[in-house]
Length: 583
Image 1 (tube, one colour):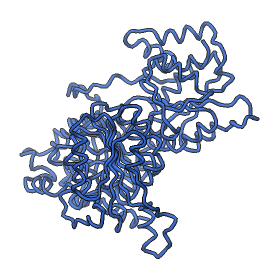
Image 2 (image 1 turned 180 degrees about the vertical axis):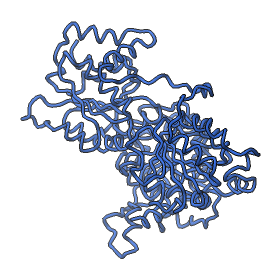
Image 3 (image 1 turned 90 degrees about the vertical axis):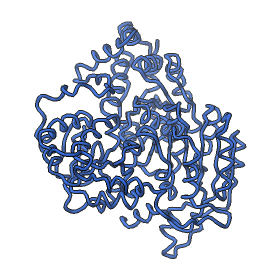
Image 4 (image 1 turned 120 degrees about the vertical axis):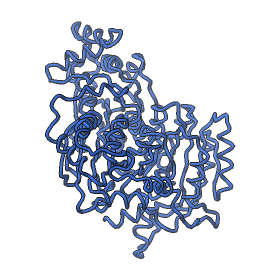
């Protein structure tokens, strides 16, 4: 067994389920070893797409995903996707072969490259250390919630393992049950690292709480007991804690909201304000601004979530709960930082609040009242906000388009959204069933990631209809991955909001009289291009054209559907106007 084979075998034994990549000579053997170990390998058409697929898969599956690339340009092609993953703290492991000689035209300073984009650099040093090196890189991704670039020097990949290292690989392969976890824990022990316990999704024993709640938890309980208008904002770190947050919210009369990446977390609750920040509906913004206590649960309070600070009232008390102490107060000052797992912290604080909260009808505590519940039901969704339909002249209003799609598409969907002027429409007019059904790769604000995001999300959530929402710019940047969608047989709906421009730049610079020839383009028949890849396609210019979508949904859905929507582009989207005010 050589080092390349050992890396693949170790990762498969540790429970890696999926790897994404483009194979060249440098990663050929390690990729084959992953496949031999039972890992599903998904071939992309470009390393940038592969990186984003892996990022989305990890986000939506809750597991470590693997990206495997060729040395040199394979790694540099993947960098934008790796950067997005690193900025989002995605547990992603990148297998990055390295040229054996500094004279090679493939030579790169891979450690510096990883550090430059915020990823953690690791390295397989030798055949003697390959098991330890690989396990530690995996643990760094898993436990550190980070993107790790694991360098695999080509000369080291070819080394044969000594007998002791072969036995270590066999230990990891040994089953059944948690033998691989035990072996990995033995290796990780000297580093002070352990595998997390299997997650209990049953809600647990209410008595199973920390014996000594922290002072910060006690202070948070007091703030909640006294608050008159509390709002909870769930971020990605709150995934899996809905039950606990809703129970605590019930005790104190809180309203619920999310950051964009956690959309759907409170779907179905009568107190759900949906996404706040630049995407917030007028009612949601009004209620968040009126809060006297705002608690962020696994939410980093970015400038987008707070509308550059304007969304939170000047007299509001702001609390941030996060497992990572370095995340507290990074994007805005907070009055109280609480270090802890969201789920366990909510349970512990709830027990403390029980002794402090006044008696009475919980449905009218805090911010809650029957009248407000009726108002939320009537006004909080963007589709319920009146607008003047701008459809005409062969172009459909993006609001009308997206409301029509929301009505047609099955509720069990997983939605992925690219970046651009259009992005608010699918983000806010398409509902999702829960917090595991919306994939929003926007930490790096890169256009062109949406289609690959949808592929990774679709593979992680195979029982849901995948929906990719793209602008024409991002669609054409990533068009090669349409072949991947077809090859994988994904029943995906790809919606292209086509305004024949980079709309954000048009609306940013156009009002100031700047020339726009560099950001506007002639018409492209995206539907015909999609048919060339083997997709079904329909062009939508008004609401009646959505009948083609309805026909496709009837079945057999044996080909992906591309909806080429010719959308109006005369005015910027509402969220873009908000963003411009913050610049």
